[in-house]
Length: 343
Image (tube, rainbow, N blue to C red; front, side, top):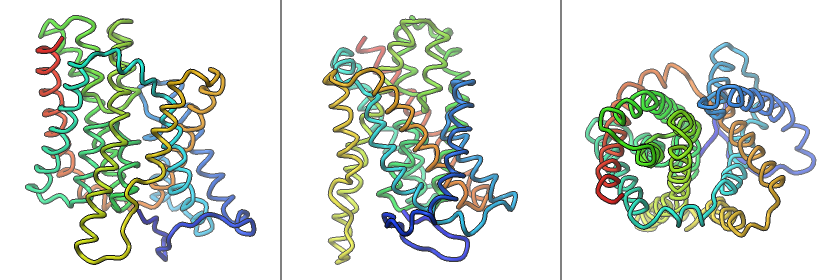
């Protein structure tokens, strides 16, 4: 992924001590925006702090507030801070809770993720959506919204406009799902646990899942959150598979600049989930890690949003929304049918 300056395009690099001062302005602004997103999420749980932060970044640039001296820090936030945040995301997963779901629901979720991902990519190609943008939309729909989009773009090499468009799509569709799924569940006569399983298997953002499950009842909330976290866990193999595929493609093309077989942040994500599952970490450490991960991801999304031309997003948004809607319907249909048959 490349983070664009307003005048130049430059690769990100780790800061040397002498360059740290140059990073501070951008990092401070991104940190303030991330804190604002976190507070909004604290007040309104269904609103993702990542979405708030990326909108603040877009607003900064659209209002003329972007300045060149912010660029080094924002570039660092959108690369290194993003990857560290993705590693810390693994601390939210408890593998034993996932295993307790049983084979049936786990198979259904994997099938739903795979089918919706492939279907979204296929529809995107038919509607003329770029390969990079359809990849990000498909990942956001199939896995976990904004954080999945950001993770996949580390190997997908999309533009900032592709990231923002994909995040906007999954946010809109996830918000609609918050209304549609409880109503459909009532009309279909789903019990509380089955509704929770379906919500976790098909709604995009974790905050949205918690909001729906909490309104439906304690049993629904517990089932929804565990299933949703299992979908988050599937982010690691999906990103790894895409990275391996892109590496093989570049080998065929004779390109020496092949991506790594397994990005380090994917390894770190899995290691963090495994560490959480051991039970060795005190609850205070887990709480700090979860908050830190959220803040880092929000800061990265702010930086991505600040590099975006809002007009470019608006031009390509309708087609991406159509593609995402198809993927969401496929995901919801496949998972509901599978859960009804297996639970």
